[in-house]
Image 1: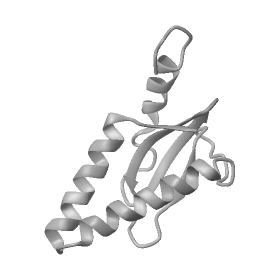
Image 2: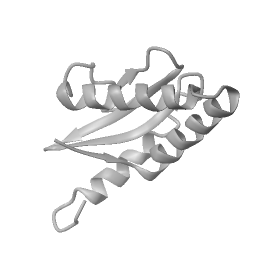
Image 3: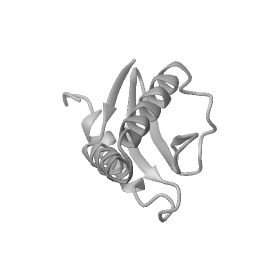
Image 4: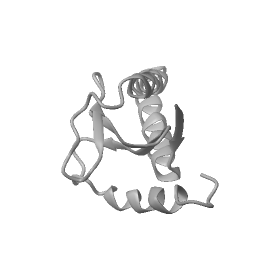
Length: 109
C-alpha cells in the first residue's frame, strides 16, 4: 500500500509539530511519532474507521486533539489532512478534488 500525503496535510503536520516543540522540548517529537503510528495503523486497517458522509475516513489521535483524514483509492492511501479537532469541520474537504485529478488515467500520482 502506497501512502501519499497531500502538501497541505504535510504543512499542517509541520506546523503542529513546530507548535508543540515550541511549547515543550520533545513534545513535537511525540506528536510526530503519534501521527506516524496512526498512519501505519491506517495502512493496515484502511476499512476499519467508518466511511463519513463526505466520502472519507478519519482516525483521531489519542494524546493530541488532531485527526488524520484520508481516502483510499486502489492501492493508495491519500492523507487529506492532519487536522485539529476544534477547527471548522471538513475545512479541507475540497482537497479530495486533487486526488481525483492525480489518480486519473495517464497521470503519475
